[in-house]
Image 1 (cartoon, rainbow, N blue to C red):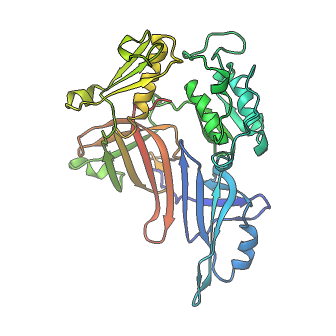
Image 2 (cartoon, rainbow, N blue to C red):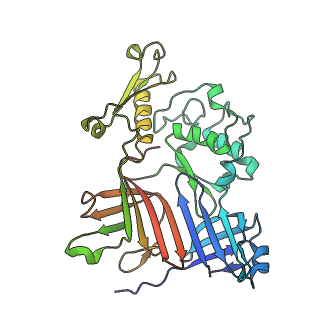
Image 3 (cartoon, rainbow, N blue to C red):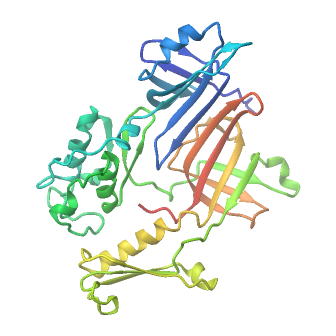
Amino acid sequence: MSQRKPDTVRIESSEGGSFDIFNSLSIANDLTTVSEAAFEVGDDGTWAELETLTRLGAQFKVFVNERLRLTGRVELNDIPIDPSSGAITRFSVRTKLADAMYASAAPNVKVKGSTIKDFILYLWEPLGITEADFQFNANVSRDLMTGVDSDGKKPTVAMEEIKLEQAKVNPPETIFQATDKHLRRHGLMLWDSPDGKLVIGSPDDQQTPQYKFKMYGDSRGAENNVLSATRTKDWSGIPGILCVAGTGGKQEWTKAKVRGFAQHEAINEAGFYRPVLLVNEAAKTDALAIRQAERELTARSMRYDTWTIKVDGLSYWNGSSKVSYGVDTVAEVYSTVAGGPNGAYLVHRIVMSRNASEGDTTELTMIKRGIWRT
């Protein structure tokens, strides 16, 4: 059997500096927010050199086992000082997505006649981000307001038409909010890529699992590869039935010409009484109303069945080689505890850590297959 070698972490400055010795570190990748890495390095003897190298705005690439993990710039610099031991350097690197989540979107961004791709490029241009900085899903070339492909083809998902006032930027929307508003209508979302680019697509929880996490309390315990785990089933705020009322819904939803329903069988069977009504006059067909109802029910069910698992190391060991952890991947959970075998889960957050007390560990947050929908 192959011998597992220690995991490595290296950071590389755009100015040419590179180092791989850290007092502690944390690297977080997430489908829903900014990816970031935090490091504590050096001692009083190296402080002056590191202060220059890790100045605010400095560009860095983060590598784990020599695979690119994150590309960003220093946004936080923290220097704890101890009279007896001197000063060390702590700093955090965050991706370009951080600016988009903070900066207001320009209200004069062109909408009429634009595809969703055009609209996004207009929005992000002030950040110096161009088409080359995006990894576009094939189905973003749709008209912004009608949902029709720019070449006239039928969209892969039904899209409600929206008015010009709804489509344009509505202050105080941020660049990210204005982008996300329309991507969700197309069944898409946006997240960080390790190379500093931005991915526009849809997470795939139906893919083949890459990792197997085992938690056996019987004779198979020698196969266990989990340090600790928490299984969460939070049914707070999950509707038993959700109705979207379209045309005519403002008068009385029972008389609405368009209606769509989505049900959560487990909530109903458990005896929870949670009907929810949403009015959307833009829904012109039952199909659109049903799609919105299902999408909204999913958004309220994100904690229906999740695992947070902590494992040893910064990579997955399959018995012969190391496999990098990544978001938008699937893991299989095997367990004789917490309800027994659990099946496949979509990985949507990963936090890698290194410190003196625990060494290298990784925490993965996962949601049950079939729940995640954009």
